[in-house]
Image (tube, rainbow, N blue to C red; front, side, top):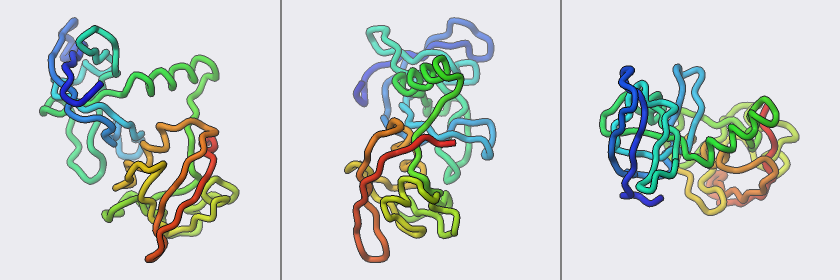
Length: 206
């Protein structure tokens, strides 16, 4: 799918079954949160569409012009803590990419739970600078975790993953969640005025 391609959202907004709405892909790889509360949010690398997605559309398919399912609609999504949390159609709809949804579903079927890759760090979600800041506290780096083994430290600012620019903590989270446990990644980060790189193998989160 490319930005500008036509899509159709299918669902039952307000209990109106069989409703279809037409739109386009407005953007890809949006770092958004999906959750009922700020305490229980998960970040997703979402497709953004201007097709109307309202409560009742969640869980329904987002399909392309050929009828192929490309995403799972989510009405409970927002742009994170830096934006006012709004749901329902305001010209901004989000869908979980189908590959990500399939991966999670396959894990649930096979193992009864979904696993996700981690670097073994905590990031400062209130950091407003460019990049993702590893929190400045003693527990920010998991002992024996991938980042610790690679020599990363609290206060490092991550600026790219495998050449993909990271401009916020949310973008870092979705970039890592798009990987698989066991994948090896190259991390570019700054420490003071120095630019450094580190290679690490992602492990399963707990």
